[in-house]
Image (cartoon, rainbow, N blue to C red; front, side, top):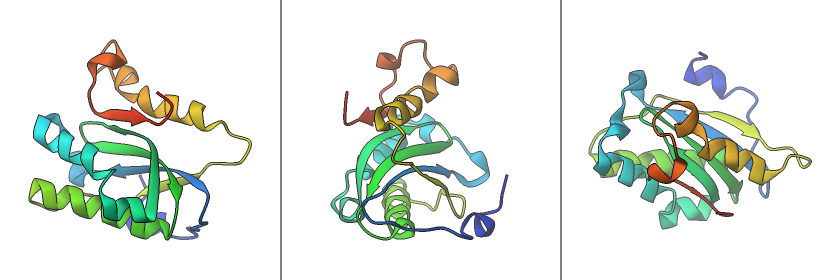
Amino acid sequence: MQKGHALRKGRNSIVGSYYLITVVTKKRNPYFLTFDNACCASRSFYHARVGEAATTLSFVVMPDHIHWLLLLKGELSEAVRRYKSYVSIGIGERIWQDGFHDRMIRQEEDLKTVARYIVGNPLRAGLVSNINHYSFWDAAWL
């Protein structure tokens, strides 16, 4: 796994582009196994200040990380910083590993396919056998 400082090299922020973001908790601590913490992480995608920087299209909150499909409105690092800040404030401690992984979605890629991949994470991880039994995800198309 790359260190946070290495993940930032060569990062581009292109307003109007779609990005798949992955953010991991410190030491992969499963902060989001608790209902309140997972709710906080889910709500924070829709915080007004986060929404100024990015539009959330899809997300999933896993026990120790999140995946986020967004439409960028500003600076990518700022959008992620705001999200991480509101989750940490809501939980009451700094919970995130430094940095994040991003992948800009190419024009020819289908956003719904990327969203399905994101939402399918709890199934692939064996957390549930039916995605309807997992509460901490959303997708604009579903």
